[in-house]
Image 1 (cartoon, rainbow, N blue to C red):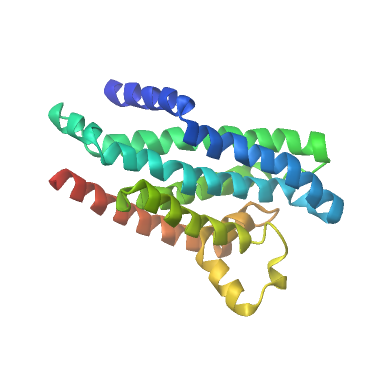
Image 2: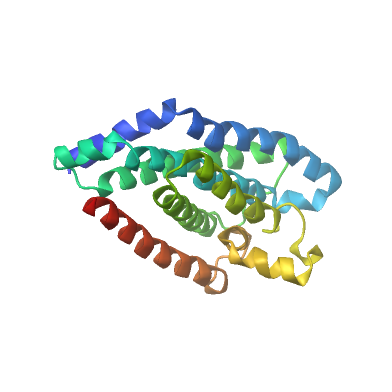
Length: 238
């Protein structure tokens, strides 16, 4: 167990120095929050009640879907995996430590948004903070699961960047955080519901934490656990 905590602490330190995670978990989402948040409030003052949820979905989606996969691909696509095997380290340790480290960074950046939004934009805090944080935690885990699958499946960095963008962009554009989903055509509305971002957004809204908004995320999480387990077992067999 001490080896696990050492590995997690080491991964946290490595991620702090990682330009990819620094950009995707902190710099770009927070700049987006500071610039676009003000525009949203100016154009649609009613968004003060949902600004925190919208910006957090953007933050988590970018960090998990664009930031996490390259780190995983680097770990399981080069000599680091051989070091694991040579020293008898479980093959899943890298995945777990990277997953938990990114989770911590996303929770920190989300907390920054929660603190700054009321101060800068007079945004409303979630009315039911315990349920809000439960929904936040669930969406972070599901989004990281998507990033984990991408990082284990696609090893080529150029292809991985393209695939991550193909998942990230519709997640944001069709989730309802940029504009009301009622404005979307029916076929785009259906496509948007395929991506977990729209469900995570609904789950974090006031009075939104319910099974009706959570069941799809639970289903996706179960599929992610199965896929990641199979992919890691395949890595071990190499």
